[in-house]
Image (cartoon, rainbow, N blue to C red; front, side, top):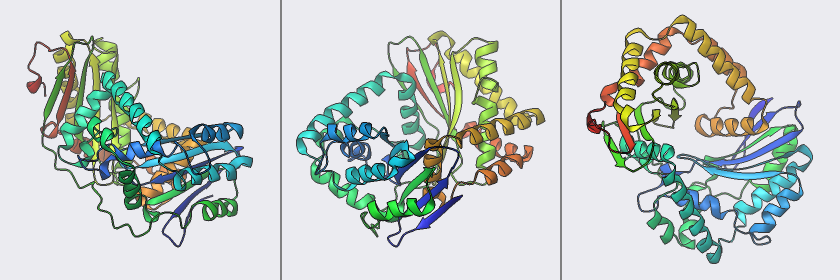
Length: 417
């Protein structure tokens, strides 16, 4: 059983029943992230996520986690470009206690100014940590390069100066404007009856979010302008990222795009892995992945190699892309890709946490519940013509952007692609 229930306020319940497990996952996912921000407040969505755990009217930060540990549950959250999600995982008998603590942190947080001061230090350290992880940093540089002035180009963590400047009023006003009933989904998955799930949402969440926020959605369609950006750093490995057009989240070719990604750079049997790493030994890490947004998409290709092999690695990759555009996938690759995708989706459905998050996002972005049977059928119906359409759209090197972090190579970075 997989369905949506709509409350009077506009809040939606995404429900997935799974009697074969003994757990329940509850996620509160709202359609707000760094794509809602401006350069002046970039980072506020993520900082707010942190602050929701820093104390409520009845519990301090330690008492929140002590309470969750005491009922044998897990609680966590994440911020992305377009969503912020707070979630719990527990045995089914603790579902109401989990709904209660999620409600408490979301509606009764005090945003104490001393806690804010401390947490700013934590987030600044998180930014430093990410800046030291060059394989992640190069993807931030690529997003900035590919999306340009579009809000999707900004980082999720934000700028240091912004983090330091946030006030308590900034946080409260941002929540009122962006945490809206109409753009929020409570997703409940696992061994729990529908009536009970609905009762929990009514009791702890319905009527407590802002309504009719009339906010401006920042994710406007991006017109890609090819771009190259680099950061020369004295590190051992060179990090190369290539950005290409991707499809939107609800595109009719989304499954074909995922299949192409699987074949080209999604695993150990992929063309990139076999050619760049296994046959030529040019890289340890080489892969592709898709990022699908409401109005935009990005296909990212990553290569981690030594500075002497930068040009060889990119040339090898470009040759592979040229071959891909010319001849497309083989029938064998299509069939293998189908099975890999089906396996990934079916295995994911055996995880309460995955079901909870996937269903939340699908309802949030498409207003439809995630249907595994329909998804499998969609995968089985992918044709070579579908994959060729994706390849023609995505692997268009006239729209490519490139980001580089590492020692200065012998070649001209601006002419790599």
